[in-house]
Length: 100
Image (tube, rainbow, N blue to C red; front, side):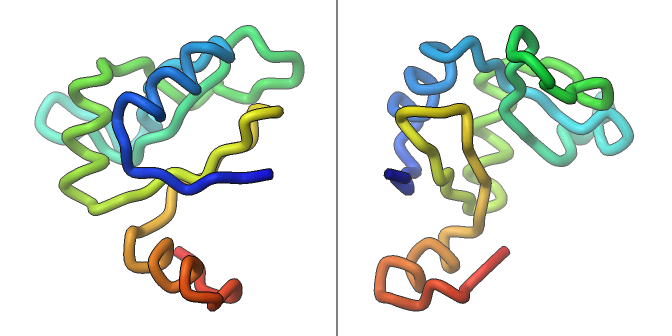
């Protein structure tokens, strides 16, 4: 069962409990801009993180807040997806076709 959250502690604890680390897509990442953020799982089998660079949790959550994101996560797997908070709110109110 998936859960949607914006709570930094929940996200960090969930990710770290599964070996996850904050990351950015390398082609969007620079000294001036964190770029697109992700959670990578470098030790997971079949994990594709060749184009990700590890960043700090501080950088991750600054971008997370600046872009007004929420995270869908699954406690029993590595599934996670970053979405806009507006999309999360629409889904919370029954619009399961909402996406971003």
